[in-house]
Image 1 (cartoon, rainbow, N blue to C red):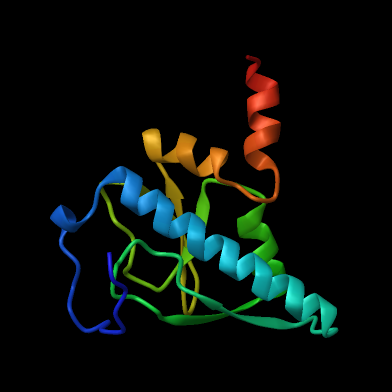
Image 2: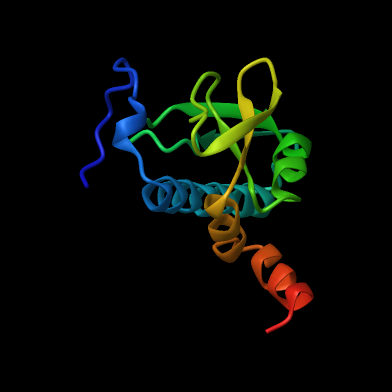
Length: 132
């Protein structure tokens, strides 16, 4: 699936499946975690420039947020940072709207997949709590 830079076209619900939504969001969550690690290495403490973690194939929007906001979202493996208005109702719910971005949370089978794909260990911790 090619990624393009056109953010002017609104996405339709039919473009998405749960698998595609979670894979794309997990990929950009991982990229943003690398951005956070690099910022730490450079001694940056205040703000981060990250990529929108929405499921839109054509979105490469930049989001500026505080490190504290970023870490608050990352406490929950089912939550993602997206540009305002980029939530996909079928697959996620809006948790909070900030000035320049929204925080969404996966629902249904997408939530379980988001937990499994969490690089910070939330998926492993959750699986351990659930047992074999």
